[in-house]
Length: 89
Image (cartoon, rainbow, N blue to C red; front, side, top):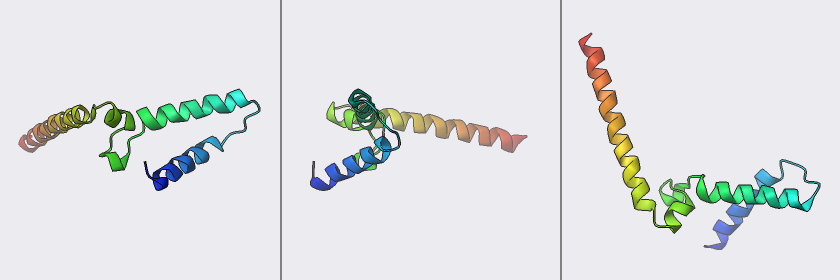
């Protein structure tokens, strides 16, 4: 990981974490853990082909991209079918 990526990660965390006041260290630790979980497992990253870091790290990138392509194809087929049905009415 490059210095720029680390700085960007910390800036993103800071912007989210600073939105609340924490009165106990445990509250802050819990919120940081929630952020790390979100950042690594739910947030899509443009630089990773809109995958999560966990997908890339654990080798699920190709599976996720294939699944995404299949969903895209099904959606396009459904849209074409709806378009044809609307055109015949």
